[in-house]
Length: 495
Image 1 (tube, rainbow, N blue to C red):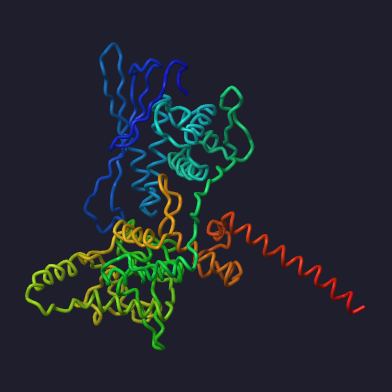
Image 2: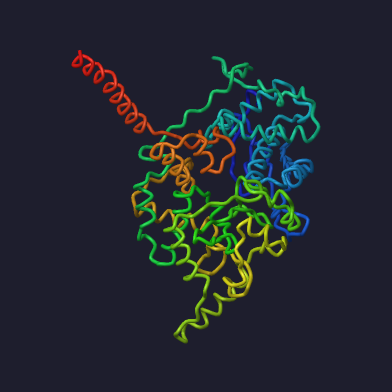
């Protein structure tokens, strides 16, 4: 991609990744920076966007000792992320931003057009996405995993299709893959892209074992008893019921329903506006409050999902509700000022939409397991269930810091450097492994309990460690030996 007498240096800035092109002797030639500011704005009734992205390419060239700065606004990329991907989750939109930032960095370095890209240039871009460190000198740049590159190319292909690119565009080719020969030249191949083997750190697994779950839920690492009760509720939801963190943080008083026989269930659904740390997967994203009354939002497993709680978990939920949401006035005068501040924060910060007000049909509300909040809330409004100490909705960063303390105190391994083993999703992985290995659920039942739509979705959750494979091989080898030789000896005795 670069000339033979030039090098490329990567410089990380607060605006993004800046690629500096220089000669072998270190003389500055030019730099390319694709920065994507994220602008917060007021939410309107007709929009589900919490933020909007704006794409800029800034190129600084040096000719004759004079620097020239050229800034170009990429309107198409901004419209694609803000409009075409409006209904996707905030995390998915951030991944699309990273993919387009990498794409336009390459195009600016190569000085080529996206729609007029040649096949060789497309191969160079694929190799650049895989192996940026082959081009960058003097920087700690890691090679990207094949799964990450495939995800990036999914959004790049969607972007090209949205732009109206021809189906003959080289990036839209399904057989696009690369390899390097002995001389280092990039060539095309029709073979499938070989996945990068993940090196698992010693003592770390993708899933939480039952004994680790018990230690975590009963941990005394958090000094505040309310925080310990909160941690117990969230950890139980993730391991016993397989909820994701965003689904836990998105629960409100309206979503916790008690049936006539005393069974407690929770409804998993999205509300307006869409928020990244409280988003639920597997259900539709709400673009406006008018969608609360749509048929899709009222349909189970499309607009909402129902999970029935274990009785012990339901008791912890009730105890947490009495400790946090009742807001009893303090007995001491010294605590009254603090109580007033917390009550004002509770009434103003943690409110959420009451969906029953938009449906106005008791039969539909009962079928959707929407609990009446008029008698449970101190102000008759709906509030988020899990709250911080300042009575604002609990955010993922606050919860992650609490969970790290628990992991450290209970000697549950944490990965360092580049994160590959998530803190929270390891509980959901543990839920899937427990269903398959301990309860021996078949794929269909496990799929239903995981709230998936296909048994193939279970495969990413069933990740065995080398120790697990060794134990399973020894276990099944013993069973085979007992089945063959034990039966043979028995037949000899009968004769």
